[in-house]
Amino acid sequence: MQLSRPIPLFDRMTALADSTRSRLLLLLERHQLTVNELRSVLQLPQSTVSRHLKVLGDNEWVASSPEGTSRRYRAADKLDSSSRRLWHLVREQIVATPAAAHDARRVQTVLAHRRSRSQRFFSSAATQWDHLRTELFGKRADLLGLMGLLDDRWTVGDLGCGTGQLSESVAPFVSRVVAVDDSAAMLSAARKRLGAIQNVDVRSGRLEALPIDDGSLDAALLFLVLHYVPEPQQAVAEAFRVLKPGGRLLIVDMMPHDREDLLQEMGHVWRGFSEKSICGLFESSGFTANRYHSLPADEAAKGPTLFAAVARRDDAQREAIADAEAGATRREVTLNLSA
Image (tube, rainbow, N blue to C red; front, top):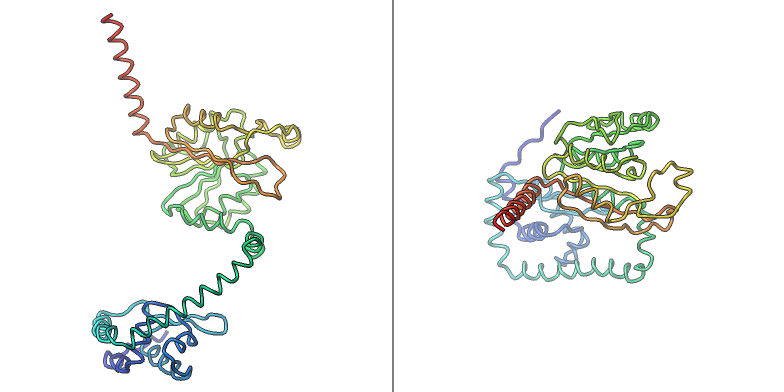
């Protein structure tokens, strides 16, 4: 492959010698603009703006990206040290000119026009926006985007992984996923789905006796699985065991309901879980911080309302509580003896 020839600094200086090109670069250092927008700001013919942009582009002062039938221009992201010093000197001169001040005022008009286009749309579409967004991007777009908040150094346990849908969603955003299930049929489907994903480890095991080492997970997920577990307390205690100090457990499951058909036809063992019962499971397993929130109902869903509950393994807080309780016990014993 032939490497591009470095551009001599003298040629780069020549590109900035024209004050219009310097004004252009000053604008593009702050904003991404099209030729038509730059024409409006500089009040020059489009052909003139395009000619100046070509000189700046040939000397690698600006870059561009396609925007429909047009292109958006911006200042180059990376400059060598000599070019940075050169631009700093030129910039000091051009930024103080009346023309640059005029450009700065006019570019605000261009940006206001952009905003007004969006505002006009939303003023007429606000009542339909949720439907339009779902139609364009699907119902899971917001949830999948939120996966980006996960720490890419984490090891995450998908406990009761089923066919591996959640593991598939989480895997691109974390270091490793350990997916566990005790159903041979579910594991077969999960391995088929996840086979090409390098950072997912699918394991066979019960939630009450996880095939995972102590303190090896940064986060554990129990998604719509706890209502199938004969002994939820053991499953939550196992999640505590395999989490690192500071690790978090997220449970998503059904709130209490009276749907007999779910027990008879879908094999559910439990009729959902209340906040009191979930917080009780957390506390008796050793978790010291927890939250429980009901989730908005999906109008298309036919099942009970769901909740999301989060708990953290905070060993330091747990030890402090234990020490305080032990101190209170010692004081009570002392008072009884002195009495």
